[in-house]
Length: 265
Length: 292
Image (cartoon, rainbow over all chains, first blue to last red; front, side, top):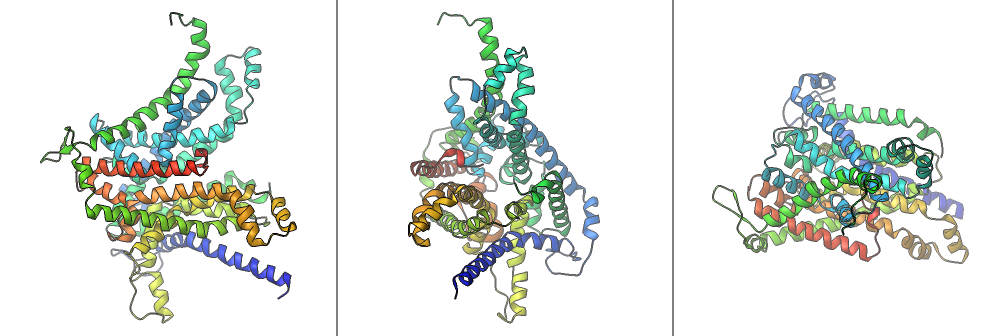
């Protein structure tokens, strides 16, 4: 075989390998989407009984599923806002000021990132029980803030590493006070890091199963609703809602970053 | 220390420091540190006949954890985590290499396609695998259609199925750091290596691998540790035949209702995590590469 032919064969082989990996990643998604059109009505909803759009209509009649989805969105929104504010302030504060115990705080940041989620979940469960905070929306939000704050801080900190302190000094010298300087000078520079951190916090919150499973009480989130339904077979309306969420996210991302696919760099 | 803090100093340094670092300190102390310390305390407690936690020091939980049944599950859990990590490296490395060094215009799209599946809830995707692999699932349908098998094969409820689910859930955590490390690789180094007469094999082991090892190390940590705790994957795909340490903990906090025993199991998991993180730092891993 010629050298060129060999290189071509190698490239082809690489392409086939990548396709197989993508197939692996998308296979269960295909199963979910196909099953959302399955006309079956008997548990465990596995055998194919023909094509239907019914489940997309039945979503709106399933109030417990909609409630769970609503809870997920509320928890994700509130915990993302809290984690983003707390994390951004914290990252800047820890970058600018020296104080006692800073090293400890810095070390604690890595714990939610490396410790298995189940340990974080049960530790929150035990402490909430001990201080008698009733489990529900509040404990879910607190738990989600606790595991997303570090990710916000890491993202903001990455922006801070190239940060030029003199622009703040200039702002103060020109007569702006600290608060104005923070909002008008510091924040715009950090914005991409903050946005990245917030997006990550939101994603983590929406998908969280393990930690929520221990601190939810009677409040159901969408992943917990799925977990509950797995025992009896996931109904096609759950598949339908999952399909809608996926399509919605893709549309949202394509709209916000439409430049991403067109432009090269 | 009799120097009083001047009003100016308070306003110019202490107050902003307090406002900025205060909230994050509260979160980390009260929602991370205190709960974990409390779990440590609880692991030395016991329960009364009504399953209430009794605060009296005893090491009985840790003695129970040395039971052969538990030891078997720690071993099984570590082995599955190890196999999962190795598989993620073997599949993730060449894949990340190909998409990070492609000259295709669609590079961003190729990268996004790794992330998109993870916008669908992980539980339902694992359930998708169960639907695919089950006795009347798609795979069996295909095999019977091709006359490769007469009877449906039960692919589920084996350790292998759980490992497949773990690889599926965690492989992005291997691919993403590898992609970052490989993309940073300077192409001229590879040319230099080739120009100096190194064969591709030598270039890979002496130039590429050492320069991208940081991605392998951080990816391995981010895959191995969660594997020990992902009880729902073992539940849905393993059906009780492939419990991980997470299943043992979950059972004590839910049906078993022996929280101190569950707490002791959690301490075992924390110790394993700390050992692995120390190991990671020892080989030169940077903590800031984890989790971003």
